[in-house]
Length: 335
Image (tube, rainbow, N blue to C red; front, side, top):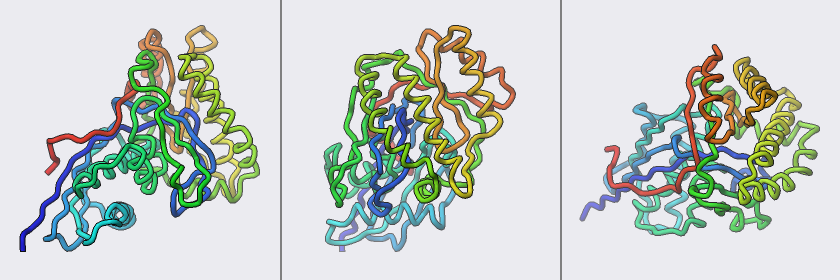
């Protein structure tokens, strides 16, 4: 018997939602209750190598040099099984993944992770899929991964079909559209959060009295954000992003029991952003399901804001990001 070796490596950038996705209408297919808008980030990425072989008897996964077991391995194995749905014969694989930023800490590591896994996995299987097809498949691993397939500014359309075939990402503007737009990613904690985004969403949808209000305003936020991006209206973009993040966290704070991702350092940065605005330096904050605060600003104000933020005691690190590119294949493998 001829042994078949199939191997590919991909890099995908993380993305931060400017209008958030929070809550699923179908957890199995990872279909959201609302559409969302994000910016793909150039300096937060995941590289993943996938190799299928007839000789492998199980899935083997290493993330950042450590062997993954349990639920983490199960999620990746389930996703690679999904990629092989149309294959006549299922094969196991060896997977190695490395990210240049903390995982499970509110920096969308699952977005870049599953986008890279999907692109590398499908290519290793000999599949040449469209960006739409890759987005739909990535969504099945992590909802926000559907956006990391594309570069620049991206909308994830919520869709309405039961099978999820109309729930995928589309590009609003390419990465070169607004290079002056900057995002300062502040690292407050590198520890894994106690409540995962997946569990947090489920809890919020079930118990928060504010969740219906969130859904009532979200589509308006999406449309205004798309206009702000296309017209490069920084003030409108910042106001919507900041308010949208606060609304999302308000739904978390009112769940039973409450979900509090904020830490003291998070609040310090948010207050510093408000103070900077009062002083005339325009900037805005946004937060995802984690303690890290992302500061939106213009390139001309980057150094001023950076110097102020680095003076805060509770900030462990900062990463400067701008709009980044789409997921891509590379020739250098991790093993």
